[in-house]
Length: 326
Ligand code: ATP
Image (cartoon, rainbow, N blue to C red):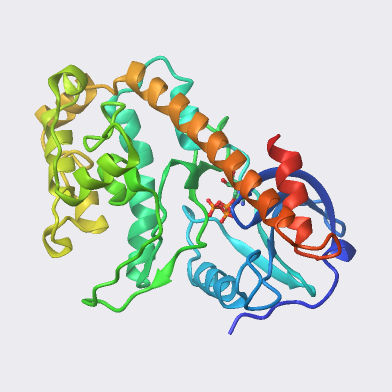
């Protein structure tokens, strides 16, 4: 079982700015006092009683820690230590300072498929490693695909947020109610070659219905610059039965990722990502993220008004989130 240090995290790290926040807490930059090295600290509130509606069960945090400990790979965020106090657990993580992959791409004017594949390969390497350890992420979406350093000539992908990740038994069916409708089958839209998900509906419900019914199309209006090899790659992932779907390892050997002939290489180099749609999609995604964060904040504030006393330690969860988002 994972060892949680009972020392005070502030004795070892200077706690800096908030660099991210999620449903369960905040991520802050940390400066290690002894070495001057920068890290990220994920501060998670622990539910103090089974009737409390705020915070996480300790068992969920233990699961996230155990998963991260099992996943030491260049494309997966590394966990260094874990500190625990009465109401909080702090994960000391590798600091990933290059931001989200999708923001990096959205800043570009053009992107060839061959350039997108460099990122896709790294994502597949990370996912393949995870699956080889019998761990599924269950929340792979643009927000959880980051870059270690966007200024590097070949930026390195880092997969983050293993809060919903689970170990699975090979061959056993696992049904998760978590995740985000557009990304439920994450590979379907990973790099959004058309800038749109082939399942995109008007509402989340419609998108979900399309995913469940496998109702998708490569609309020429949006996929005219997409190569046939890319469409073939996507099609082989849009398969309902997971046993018939390409595995991450098989994806890495698909000719779109690893072309075998000169013609295939040329084909990839001629095809590009539809940047106009990609930028539109990314802006919409960002807007939705802010909306969701304000929604969470309002809900937490309402919970507080509905009878939590101001001396409740869980209240601390409300304040930082409000401060960060409003
Ligand atoms: P969610 O609500 O999506 O489940 P969460 O509470 O589990 O989120 P994370 O997704 O792990 O939290 O982290 C929240 C945000 O903090 C991320 O979207 C990212 O922007 C930032 N972040 C997380 N880990 C790191 C890291 N190691 N380095 C830099 N930033 C990070």
